Figure 1 (cartoon, rainbow, N blue to C red):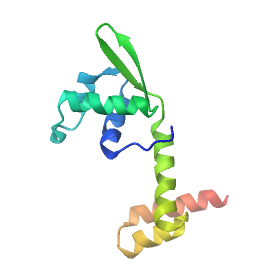
Figure 2 (cartoon, helix red, strand yellow):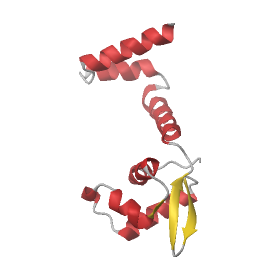
Figure 3 (cartoon, rainbow, N blue to C red):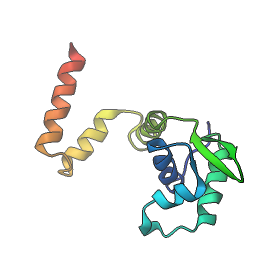
Length: 122
């Protein structure tokens, strides 16, 4: 899958990563109600995700059941690399420094980073 998933499409993927296969109406009912998406909007986005190769579908009577073809982990990895490349020259250290300079890391975050670094050094 080369084409990027939009933020809105990502919402549908989150639903399907949690439970699949689902029909369009079931997906629509599980999306955050604040989105206020019609069933037609959800069907349009599901069609786009099919075209992008992110989903597969199978017939179930008069409806289609959708399931992910890509894992959440693969999308997170791809988007993380994209962010690092675009904003920080592909390097992690400037990202962490940016977060620290803006007081976006609390004591728990710092402890988790320290534990991860200690584990990586071994």
